[in-house]
Image (cartoon, rainbow, N blue to C red; front, side, top):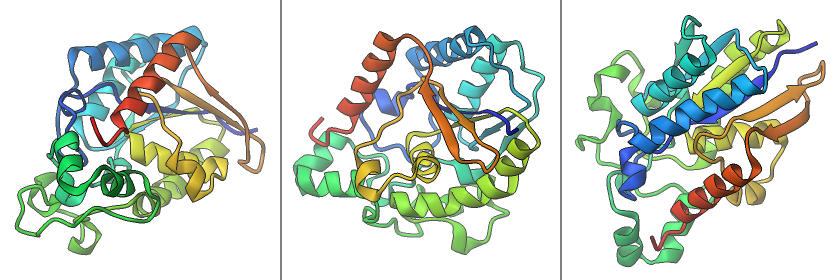
Length: 250
């Protein structure tokens, strides 16, 4: 027997709402995002789920989403492991820029390549930029060579997998149920690994904000069930909202 895994993307953030490239920049949830987090907790409670441990990124939008969902589950007491390895993809020189303006400047096709291709990162940040993680105290104990100036999805998978193998897999093998609350791209990278997606398939794959994604495994930790939890109409609406965000012309 193995444990159950749920992936949860944080609720809408203020920079999601403003249509800005967010990446590792730390921004709070909107009121809608907080409601999405509470609703996700309620959905998991209605499904009879309970967890043994929780993993989040070190970004506030994921931390707050986890807190609100756990409060709704009645499990605020659970230990939470926070790691930079679950952070959103770093968008490099695009970080903080308006998506529509960036498309107008560089062309929608080029921006789509930067956003959706598996192995083409955006232009890197200059190390002196305040958006570079070297200037953020939460990363002060990390080796400088692991701090990204930009990332593609393949880079995100490389940094996510050590946490998956070292911390999540052992928990699942001990039949523990695990909740991971993170970001669109860190969760897409992990889903690619779990579901065996090709680079082409993951380019078209999105995880909606506030929609829990449930995984069950066989004894070899091969996925035997994947399900998005909640009302199908609400899930479809959330997926459509994410698809609109992915439109480089917005």
